Image 1 (cartoon, one colour):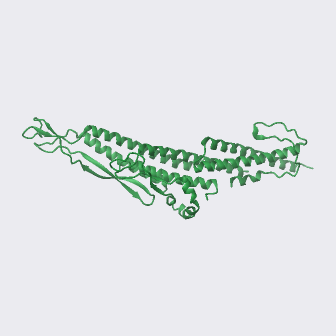
Image 2 (cartoon, chains in turn orange, yellow, blue):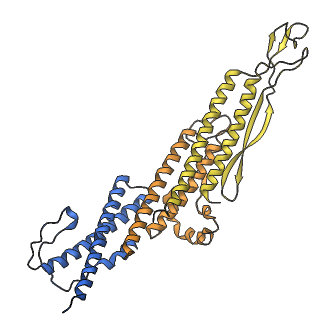
Image 3 (spheres, chains in turn purple, green, blue):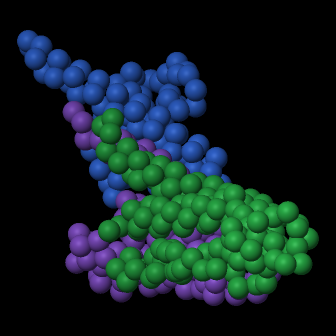
Length: 125
Length: 138
Length: 110
């Protein structure tokens, strides 16, 4: 089950992207912290699969700003070199992910803007 | 605090941490030749910095803070400089345990991390701006 | 949801049901109507235009939702949404013209 309307889906994705952005920010900020493991959010498809349950749960929390609770942030698999300090952050990977987030976010806002203006166009007399 | 603002805060903490790191590196570099003032006394001892991450429960994001600024406990290299005021009776002077090459490499790394954090700040700011822009021009 | 709001544009035509080729506004340029009666082909044309709009909008919505889920070609999304915007703008313009024409006709003295 998934959010039925385009606007709901767009909102869900933008929240997911924001959580991902904060995970990436945490990774980059802690690139030199000993023992820190890089985090990432679960994939968006997984979020959609359980969207029904968490959508109810976060409705009340939306205005309170607790929307992050519905997205699981878990340690990323370390596929690079593990430093002696046990830090698994690779700056280039993080910057690439940040680029992905940006592109998806731009597409998201552009879609929302376009459909919003189409709706306004249709109801204007 | 929503996730994007949290990202901004986290990246700002990264900027702060890396600047501290740069400050320590520049102190080391500036004092790479600072010997003691009296005979046989210790020179400048290299400083080291260590970071620690702080998990913010509300947002689930981890900021970075400076854990401590310590002194490098390794031994001082000895040089033969009989004219130096810090020379002992045999003419040997203890030099600071600062390796300029290591400090320069550290500085480059700190710069790189600083730039990466700066990019995150810019991006988070842009994403927030894009969201607000949705309301404009309607 | 968005598509439903456009249903107001669908004109119910009691006239005609002619089998003539009607102008297709969205195929670039209006070909002259080769119809039996102007009234029939006009009504059909408007109906066709409206339903084409609905299809274009549905396609745009579908492609956009796929893009939001993460797997659609950016260019496709942009093309679909732009076509939908063009179609909608045209349909709205037609609707406005039709409404004002109807009002004008109804104001004419008998």
